[in-house]
Length: 226
Image (cartoon, rainbow, N blue to C red; front, side, top):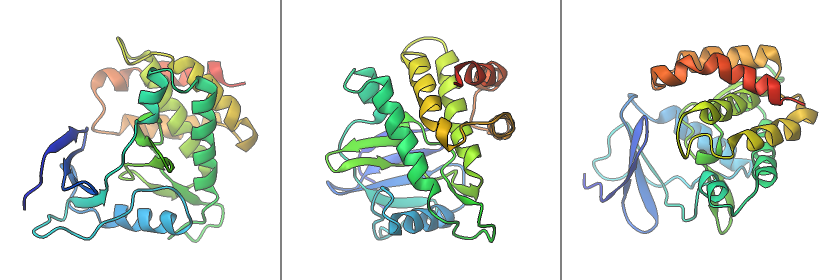
């Protein structure tokens, strides 16, 4: 199939323009996108902000997703440009996590479980004219909400410890503000952080440098926790 212009390459996928309304997200690390589509459709039915899902393109592969083409900066870009401050960015991330965790599980029989994004950080939030939209549901799962909060916090801490710009730029204030905003929800407990660290250590797409920084990242989260 004709994929159109390459818009960007991520750790696990390439994104192509199909036209002015739709993009093609093509994964390099999985056999199909059935589960991701199901999760996005499910949380979208509850009003959670996800990209609209388009019809499969002619000749599409099982690893392809056709999604709404979003216009606007990522939350990361807005923070780096000074359009939003750390407190505003943290409040947005905390609100999105809170709203997601209010959605009951799709497949789990445990009522304490909820839908988890497990990679909700500023680069996966697009600020459109209609509001914030959460992208990249490839790691979504179900479980206790504390794991999702810990994953977001640990990812921010790992970015803060990375050398050179833009990594580390204004990330510590954002991390501290996020943990303060999440405190009333239960924050990220030591048990949550241990699970999050184990999950990130097992992520084959992290670099060795990122993986080796996880111990310091956990310490940074603990040091920023109110």
